[in-house]
Image 1 (cartoon, helix red, strand yellow):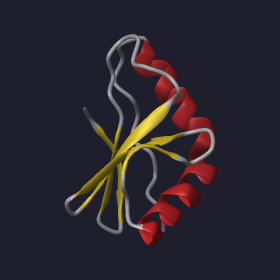
Image 2 (cartoon, rainbow, N blue to C red):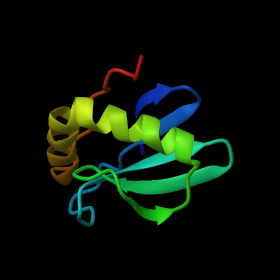
Image 3 (tube, one colour):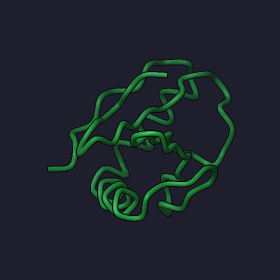
Image 4 (cartoon, one colour):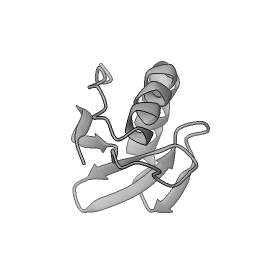
Length: 88
């Protein structure tokens, strides 16, 4: 599972296996916490995540939503996703 972005100690990854389960999502890691987050609305699908870091991810999602959906489509075709600029 490649890392597509990292910022403020948060690692964001996306599986690139054909037919990854919907809805489109990312996998996020911070210290010992991990979660899956819906790309469309920024809601946690699985796991728990610190609220401050979750807000940073949600802001990043809004900025890069189009790129994330393009990466999701690549992943659905079994192709490696592109890196996305970190939150600055």
